[in-house]
Amino acid sequence: MDKRQELLKKLHLLVQEIDKAKEMVDEEKSQYLNNYENRIEAVIKKLQDGTLPASKGGFIGTMRGISEYDSLASIKALYDAASDVDLFYSKECQKW
Image 1: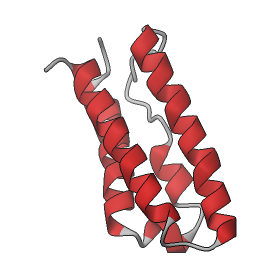
Image 2: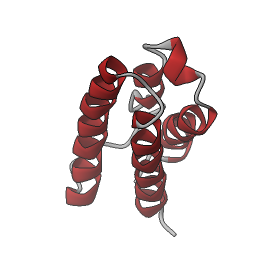
Image 3: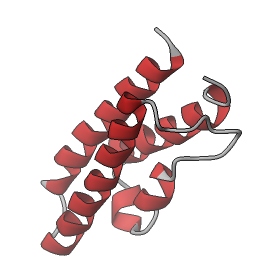
Image 4: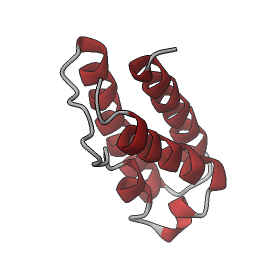
């Protein structure tokens, strides 16, 4: 599997974890997760249409979005999925 496909798989897993997390939090955080999911979907679209740049060691920002709230960061599956996306992008996607 090439790097773009692997990243896409990780992003889709993150979206699944976001959907699960929405059921575990209050309305305010659920709305926040809706907005966060929209940002992730925008990244997925850029990846699919070839406009997402290589990382050059940088991050997408998936971890930053989760760390906004301690209660979101404490959801292990969500935290792990966000971390996996950022680390994979930063380390493995420096060049396409």
